[in-house]
Amino acid sequence: MEEKRYFVHPSSYVDDNVAIGEGTKIWHFCHIQSGASIGKDCLLGQNGYVGSNVKIGNGVRIQNNVSVYEGVEIEDNVFCGPSCVFTNVVAPRAHFPVHGVYARTLVKEGATLGANCSVVCGHTIGRSAMIAAGAVVSGDVKDYALMSGVPARQIGWVCECGKRLDESLTCSCGRVYSQEGENLKKCR
Image 1 (cartoon, rainbow, N blue to C red):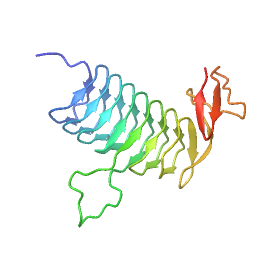
Image 2: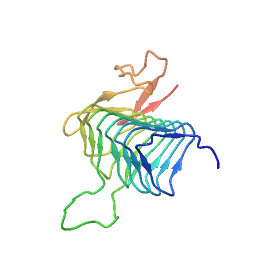
Image 3: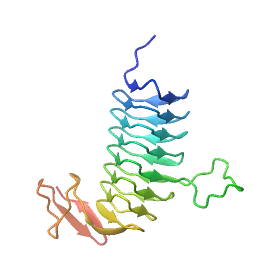
Image 4: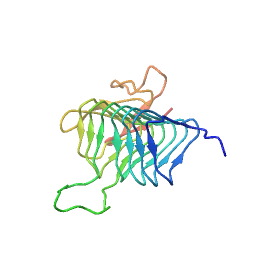
């Protein structure tokens, strides 16, 4: 029998036909459904849920009480704060189930979703964007955008390192950005 190169707490359930990368840790009371793929060096905190056919990249941190439903894709190095919420049906009704037809949500590389934020399905959260705690994302989010409020609105820009950028668009970490129209681009 081959030794597993990842950790799953004994209180968690991993269905058949699941791919889990080396170095990943799945903690207490989690459930990973069939067809899910979780990359290398990820962390899934207590009470986590990963739905069927969900794809999670490498280095992703999913904190306690987060459910990642079918239709959601999370790229590398994303941080999902405690109790952040994903949805996967635009107009859910108990009497009219969608029978596996889910809206796609994409969270791009390096994005941060703050504690208790909600992501309404069918949208893309840009690369290295930061969503404030408690915000409700109801539209697409640009790369490097800092979003806050209900509904979430852009209140600034953030560097890849997570620091808020000032008007010069130069971070204390040395990265420099330029604004092109309504978008931000990393120069160095």
